[in-house]
Image (cartoon, rainbow, N blue to C red; front, side, top):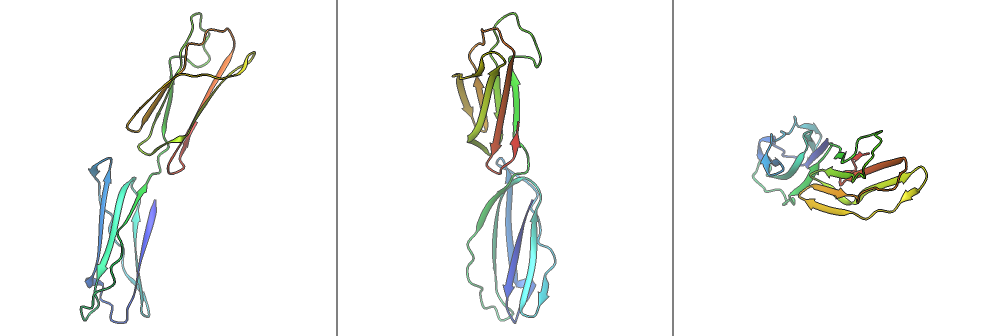
Length: 173
């Protein structure tokens, strides 16, 4: 969640003359727009907050005037994303703790609307062969990355670990 604080410093403050416009969407679809709370005044300083609890892409724009209709200086529209969900991470093509007579080709799939490709990693380690450097086939579509490892043919006990971190710092392992 994220909270925006709107502060107005004005002797002739009128909360009805302040407009706070918020847009909200998630993956291109409109979501509920949060509303500003009650104004709190301390002398000429007046504050309200808008809490952005739902994951999504937001903009906030503030404009207004005082009681005499003197316009407040233009404030640049702020755009930001709230992302509290960890990315999806799945491994297929092999079962956990399995013994395989035939070669296997693990597939690692990462999915997140805010995927950070620079923070995607995996490691294949054999108990006898150590860390295996593997080159496979990567495919990216939207927020999904699929990485197909080459067939594992050498007999060993392997451990495959994977990690992803999205642009908001949410991690899945």
